[in-house]
Image (cartoon, rainbow, N blue to C red):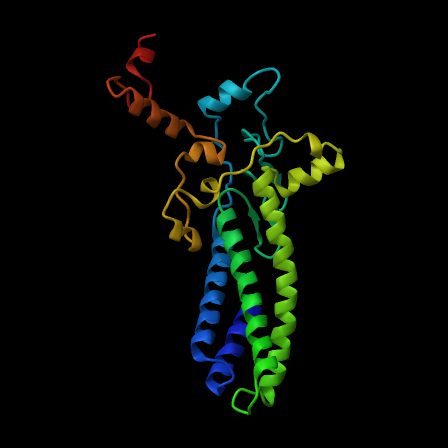
Length: 270
């Protein structure tokens, strides 16, 4: 927050002094605002915590509830552990499709906030490139005193340049890491485990569809740090709850009579 805020303040000062065009400064501040909003959403959003009442859905029971592929339980939470989920020792909870625990976010990155994390990386990368291009253009193309940086602004610009280079290198590495995870379906933790056991080449995971990250909303919503809407939340999250399973059963069989306890009339007659 301090680094992005500092760079935004610097570009505002440059625009006020005539060093850069005001509309370019406004565009940079807008990108920084989107990056900070994405950072806040990643930090404060639920990354995909597995509740105590979590149960596998019917598809998972058919595909995994066999001796060859038994349903797993978390030894720490004592709850159902969905595929590709991990128990975070820092957060002390299981996270569905957990990628890693990010110290910069003070939160895990999982299925619930992966979109916001990607947006933060992309907007921060864009801010870095935009900053370097704008400052580099001014440095090489400035031919008069009106566009030259003088006094304190020169020192501010030097600091922003160093920060932009560092942010560009860091976010580029993280974007490549996340892209690899989406293309292979293997998160950071799973990839490290597979590499340690030398079975990464035998991975059978499928790529993660973009709609399972950004939702089924309009494409322009993919660019905003708002929570995604999934077509099948249980499939994306990797678990269901007894309440949701009951609602689905009541929707599929609306003529069946249910008691206040949630049991059908046929079940009560047994």
